[in-house]
Image 1 (tube, rainbow, N blue to C red):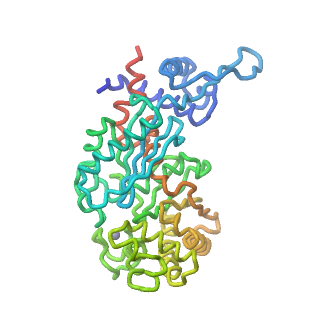
Image 2 (cartoon, protein in one colour):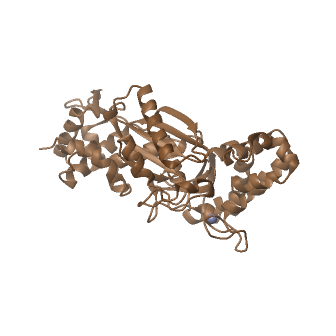
Image 3 (spheres, rainbow, N blue to C red):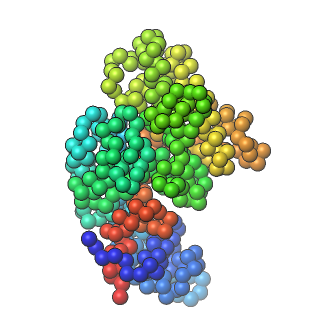
Length: 425
Ligand SMILES: [Zn+2]
């Protein structure tokens, strides 16, 4: 293990300067001092260390307005990388991003199915190695690994309570086990929250710093970003709109509550309804997929049937979309946001139904609609946003550690900031 940061001040100012350079794109030392409020001497000192560590590069001089021309600085995007992994029942998706948060590689592999968690984690470590080797990045340039999974997370042992289709993962020490076999520090995050961070970093929210990402994959959830930072709640489980009740007399959900949005209208509920109607089963080709196929895959088949004009499939989705619209309205009312991003593979598959339905609900029923509209947009990277967000999380832990989760300490321990602090006098 590398040495711990010596002083908080060093860690803080290094992160602040790095983040100022990242946010600006191109900036001079004087510019950094003016946006951060740090003294010129501190900025010079930190920048010298960043240059020595190759994290920042000098790219030329600005036009002078009298006096010495200012040297311009930029982040060196290839100096470090982060890996993001999205573990879902249907697929395991990997992304590698550079220091600027831009994806440089992606890989989608089959989901865990019913395999033993230990075997799956071993496979994940191998697939990460493969991906990193394929793009020729030296291992020591990887800051860490962001790992995203569904279900309530506990800092003790990965997923504490799991959706029915991932029961064997309950209380499996997911993050510690993956850290052991991959040799990389691991940050664990909820899928919807990671998707929201992914949208923010990938530029899908166009600098809107207050928004929610509604996530529809296997389940339904929301990721909340406030002032550019994910809101996690007390234990990393904020935003579980899918497990708020739309009917107090409704069916019991796997989470133990009654009449949850997810139980009434999530992809699994849509798939179960479709299975009861032989016409929809035929139109969507559900028999060919089989009972054991991932929910997201069967849901996508129903969405395809709807796009092809099947009225039964369309009706099922429209009913689900009315519920999801109300869930979206609840999120918007609670947070008073100007933007909702729809992300996750199931929104991508059935956007023709969900996007207009959610827009309509918000236009007619959002509480503060006389003050401002809520823009509803479909993510440009709905399939990979959680994996990109997971990698971005590692970067965010680096740039703005004071805003990140306590788990971020795992990454900082082996990351740039402590690396630099060991260089300091
Ligand atoms: Zn529930």
